[in-house]
Amino acid sequence: DPYSSDPKRHPVLHINSLKPFNAEPPPEILTDSYITPSAIFFKRNHLPVPQVDPASYKLHVDGLPGGSLTLSLEELKTQFPKHTITATLQCAGNRRSEMNKVKQVKGLNWGIAAISNATWSGAKLRDVLLAAGYRPDDAQWARHVQFEGLDKDVTGTTYGASIPLNKAISEEGDVLLAYEMNGEDIPADHGYPVRVVVPGTVGARNVKWLGKIIVSADESSSHWQQNDYKGFSPGTDWDTVDFKSAPAIQELPIQSAITTPSDGAMVNRSSEEVTVKGYAWSGGGREVVRVDVSVDGGKTWQVAELKSSEKGQELGPSPPPGRAWAWKLWELTAPLPAEAQELEIVCKAVDNSYNMQPDTVPPIWNLRGVLSNAWHRVKVKIRE
Ligand code: MTE
Ligand code: MO
Image 1 (spheres, rainbow, N blue to C red):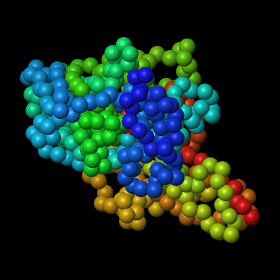
Image 2 (image 1 turned 90 degrees about the horizontal axis):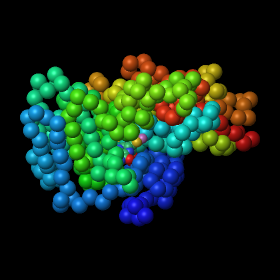
Image 3 (image 1 turned 45 degrees about the vertical axis):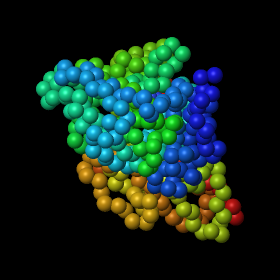
Image 4 (image 1 turned 90 degrees about the vertical axis):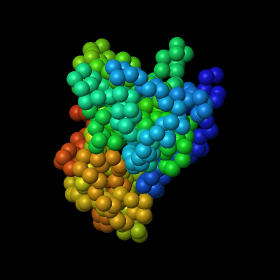
């Protein structure tokens, strides 16, 4: 069993698949803390977790005419400045289960918690590329930076992905070769000893157990770059789909969801009000500027209070424009409508480009069930 050396996991996680291990935290717990504890951070593995010996670990950088570079873990840690960012990771398949309710899609049936927020520390990819001999002239031919994981399938094929060169090399891109998560060595499930953190970009490009970096004119040729993680029209089915016709997902669209109350929960009439909590995040470093909440199915709306720090109440300083990598948690307490026996609670977020979420799932349904970001709705019963 290639999975027999997989690490121990926290029992509270909701498991979507055991081998490979895919799991998400219960939504109510997810928004208990601004920084998601690593133990309950969602886990998305395509393959067995590789066991990497930190003493013999080597990171290879290839593809540059200026030469190649091989770094030990120690060299990565000591030869480059250490940077720390707080960044949210979201799987392209987060909230896929809502698409499944419209019409069956292919993929893990994620709920609303295939998203988590952590602090990440490591070397900047930019600094390592420059040390490997990257020169501004290379932008003439190079377009992508490819990443290869050390996790392999039975045929020896490794997990791989790529990002645009300009994201990788930009000072403002903040792409890290991270060796710490939440102030500790990255746990086995999250890429020990080194993973790429591409803030603002879909989870799939944040390659774990990083073995190799290749600067290239081409995207990664991996299955996950070419034939997966792409969006299509609701009218496209498995007989007509042409994966070459759509771009690989990189930045993700605006997203928000309600973590409490949960769907089907009861609220007592005597409590007179209901407190609604959730998360909101947008890709590409776009900052969430507002979350609207309705307790009457979207007829009337109230603006939720945004929180972007551990202490909760106060909003931290705004990140530099275009570098809002972390989610915002939000909260709203609303009076219970007098007549209603049931509430339909709805949320929708707005980012600083005024991107908003679509109101329903059918117009964004796609056969792979990715990019599921319609208004999130939960129904709650009022107990008289
Ligand atoms: N990297 C490797 N090497 N192997 C993988 O299976 N899964 C990707 C990405 N990086 C994956 C990987 C996907 S699809 C996602 S959503 C994120 O890792 C999940 O990161 P996490 O498990 O730390 O939450
Ligand atoms: Mo993912």
